[in-house]
Length: 88
Image (cartoon, rainbow, N blue to C red; front, side):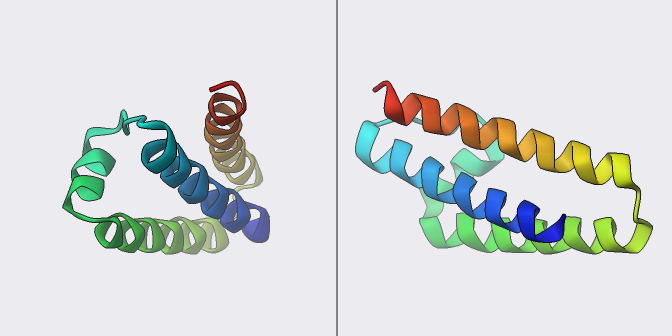
């Protein structure tokens, strides 16, 4: 499950980057938007730290349903971004 989550986070970063830089989209999350406007490096650092934190919590508590929910939410974000890219 952790590998799936990391792959989904990478896909989220790549699709977000593509949407913003190639299609002129904007980040709807105010915190992420602020970080992106400050520079993609800040966004990436935050993504790495938040991913590591979530992985630590997932491994520490081993709550199967919560792990599935976190991956499912990440998958929804990636699918949404991908559909926007495909149909733009």
